[in-house]
Length: 191
Image (cartoon, rainbow, N blue to C red):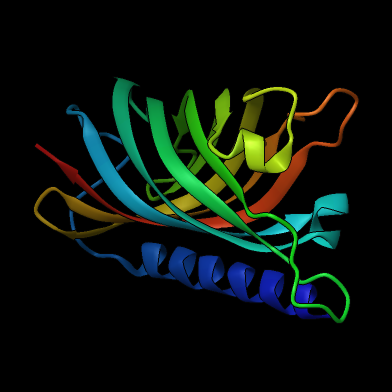
């Protein structure tokens, strides 16, 4: 029930931002810029699937560059850090070990509407605490589809907010992947 509430809250925030994007009267159009846009953001999420049995939530940060290709289409390059916090083990002071990841991804961001985008990225995720987790591998494939809005705040500055599903393939032989439903809120700027 708590997970459903958190997911609903994330959806409500994105809906509100989408409405705010439609109400925007400024002449700034984030889908047609001709210069590279950089962003620094906070990433938060909830584990989904089997991963939610052992871990509570994630928190991290990321840097991203949006490189314009043609009108409304950008190539993205993204790198960051995520800590996925382990749950306490039944009625003990012990908890599951946090998962610490450095995802590095590239992809495409397309604006079907002036402020609303669809983004897909793929790359590699590096496990920082491989020994603590007794993992077989320190690198795994990661992919992340995302939808979001970019809201002008003045000059060449924007707020970029998106909801994404991120899946990191297993670091274990025949193991499960790590999946999260997350929110990224970033300050974006052009030079």
